[in-house]
Image (cartoon, rainbow, N blue to C red; front, side):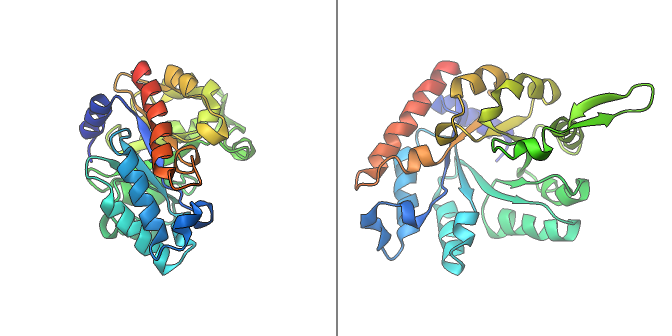
Length: 274
């Protein structure tokens, strides 16, 4: 999926919502837990209920990998069920030496039908380059994340430059500045946590044109208003993810209807910001 197609979907649906399919069978409604194909059936109903309100789905692969072969089968069926108009993200946070990353890229871009994958940048350019070589596929690099542990490394001050032009910057700023030169606005996005809204203006000063994948609204407490106010660019430039707040909106048989209701609330608010 290319950039223009993403923008077109945002404009048509007046939404930049990404629904996270972080499906945990123990949190699903009890009437589904004994279903022979419980995870896929749950995902299918969530997708059917929300597909006109969102532009993207994000599958956190850990929830599927934990179930072994059946989990991988559920993930593949889910990806193939998502309509072609939606941007499909593998939240896998991969990143390794070049030949290994090449296999990760093949797994998620060829064997599985994902449009994008999240990656960790800390092994450098050769660990990310294999993902960037795919046409109309996207590499979503961890920038400034929403978890408390972001302070351990991402918010560390480091010195940069030579003796005459020495300046300090956060490590996440170094990542954004460096990685943005490896690709472009048509194949690189960055993960930026909604709980870091105070940094969005600074982030936009570094990467004004790249799309941002923004987790952390909903259960993690991030503000959609603040994210939209400080993170939006001329093309919107945001994919705001909500997972638990939508997919676990109800533990009863009406779970899909309740998921739709919450997704509609997000979409309606987003329409006001566009």
